[in-house]
Image (cartoon, rainbow, N blue to C red; front, side):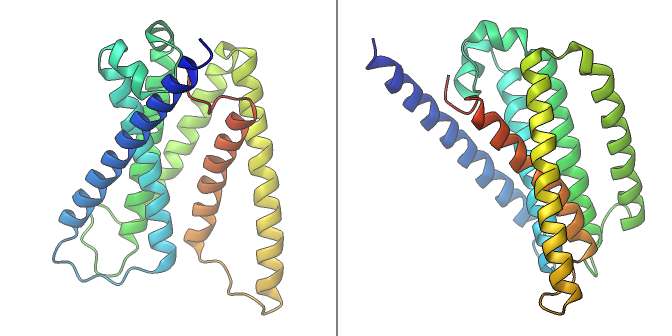
Length: 217
């Protein structure tokens, strides 16, 4: 019995990694097709923000596919114990998937809209206001859902927020001080957005890993 569980976990981890790799490859091919023929001067800050946006977008799409397919298939793609747990958590996971897709899309759009010569459907100003509206809406939804969270998810949210705050404090103080002293270039405005969303993403994985939630179920 003890030899079967690791084997099952390894196979599931392999399947998840393969699915993630395929999704990433498809996304990169799609992005290259969309930008084909455009000789744009992407700046490093724009590339970083677009990359973080793509990570959020792929995460949302991956979870969305996992909850859209039959539960017995979805449990193999997502890190849930069984099909029953997937069905129970489908509502909350759907909300999380939609949130990640929305965040990823607007971050990518904001980065692309600031590239000189880019033909975007909206201006950088409009993309900013959309991002701000999403932040406000997301905050209100999170407050409304707080009472529905169990103790584990509440503590996970608190841990992720605390880790994010500590990372932002350290990076902002060191980077800002070094830039003021002429030891480093000053951060680009887009770097601040990348730092905020990237730190929260990393903090969420750290908080989940500390509680054993990253281990394949």
